[in-house]
Image 1 (cartoon, each protein chain N blue to C red):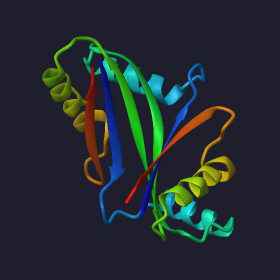
Image 2 (cartoon, chains in turn yellow, brown; image 1 turned 60 degrees about the vertical axis):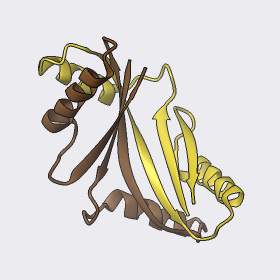
Image 3 (cartoon, rainbow over the protein chains, first blue to last red; image 1 turned 90 degrees about the vertical axis):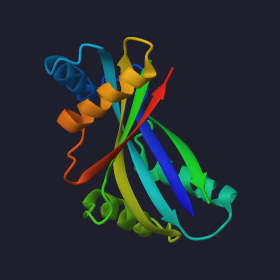
Length: 80
Length: 80
C-alpha cells in the first residue's frame, strides 16, 4: 500500500522558496506567473491492506515527525 | 489559473531525504513503513485562461528552472 502525504505551508505563512521561484520565473520572462508556493510530498511504502488503519497511522506520523503543524498543513492520500 | 507541478527524483536515483524519513519513522516505532521517497510540489498562480498554452509554458519552466531533469522527473496538472 502507498500513502502520499502532501505538506504545505499554511496560508499566511511567509514562503521564501516560493517567492524566489516566482521572481526567478519573472526574470526568465515568464510574466504570466503571478505567484508561487512550494510544498513537499512524501511517498510512503507501507505493509498491510487496511486503508483506514494506514491513514490513522500516517496522521500520527505527520503529527510526530513529518509536518511542523505550527506552520504546515498536510493532506493524506492512501493508494492500494 | 493554477498549475501544480510535482517534481520527484527519477527511479534509481539515491534519495537520502527519503531514507532519513523511513529510518526515523522506524525508530519512532512505525514498523509498517518499508520505504519513503520525498519530492516537491510547486503551485503556480498564472494569468490567462488557455490551459494548453499554460501547460506548454510550465513545461518550459520545468526544463529551464524548476526541475533538474538529469535526476528529476516532473508532472504538471493545470486547474481552472
